[in-house]
Length: 82
Image (tube, rainbow, N blue to C red; front, top):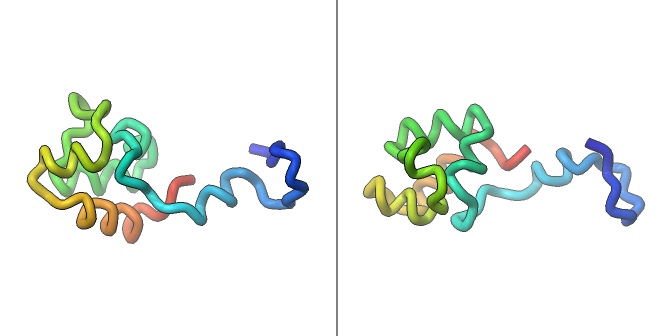
């Protein structure tokens, strides 16, 4: 995707977004679109089907894990959003 915001950056949007990290307020559905992130969700017991509307914070609580553990694993294993 081309960078079109008008800031004159030469980076593409996808490269710029890679610097960010997954956040607790993002939904399971959004994160699950990344295959590596989806694998992490499954491994950690996060309901990625019926719980897709939940935020990562809500989904972590429902899975009995801390959101910090989930985010740490996502950001280490799956990398930042693409």
